[in-house]
Length: 287
Image 1 (cartoon, rainbow, N blue to C red):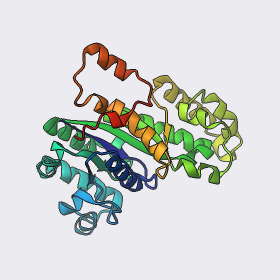
Image 2: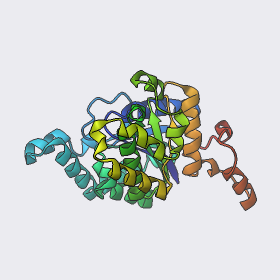
Image 3: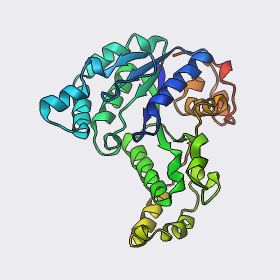
């Protein structure tokens, strides 16, 4: 059994920076980490890459050969990866013995709420390699400063959660920069807890561009609230405490906190409901 994270999010949300920072943090607390780059458009990697999709297929080659744009090219690459999943499996098998895995996926959001190829890749790996994965969905925190963009982020997060059907954590990334985009209309808790979205309506009405979509926006907010699935945690990738708190959440969702423990059902239940500040140094299980 191996554990890891599926890192996704829109372009510019900080996925590659996240993988770099998270791999460094996990290494510092004693875990062997392998970063797997599955973004064929990412040709400037700041981290040491254990597996790189460019060894299998390159986006530039696909675009040139098939006269595709970047979006169509990424869909083609994910289809190609799915059909050649044995290549990826063979690369991952040696790593699964003692490594914690970070999968750096493309930023094309359609791959995770519309198309099935990326999901099929993840599900096949889970089945073939006995992986325990949590989806970490990054959303740039600056979207909170614009009510319309925030509602869009909520819908994207909800659609992705429903489509992927995996343990899932939504993260407001670059939280340290949020004040640089202007004062928020509400306290940060409003945006992380996704509280009563009707309060957003007044602020949306102030934008003349959004006025004619008032009824649509209201219905979309109702959809998000009716499912009652979306909330966010925050992240400053440069802050050790912030990264550590996120690691604790992830370890609870994918079951890492239970790895290597021999406990009764009662003890497991106590760990599951324990406050988030449990001591991850106490559980040095590496894979």
